[in-house]
Length: 99
Image (cartoon, rainbow, N blue to C red; front, side):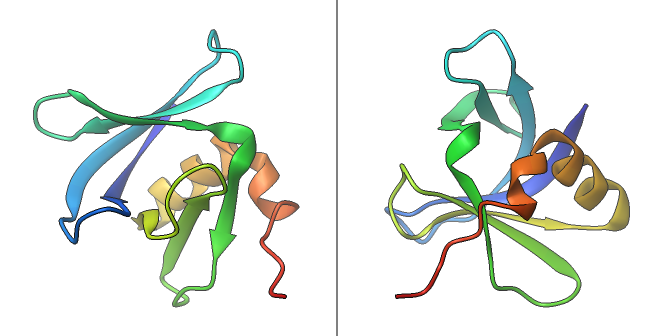
């Protein structure tokens, strides 16, 4: 299972179309972010460090505790949102708490 997203690395303002898949063989399990056109690996995130950001109703925004503050994935569409939540069930419990 995979899902499409818009990827930002948190270092530059560029937004790239991406496909995200889970690497279950990695330790820890990794969310692999691939360029949508070339399938080149753009980034690897520790899947257990992913959490939801506040977003609009029609978008799922995902960040990662181990990446720069601006690093995020933007997911839209019912099918991609369901796939993202299916691949990353910890998103429901691992939300960031505002201090």
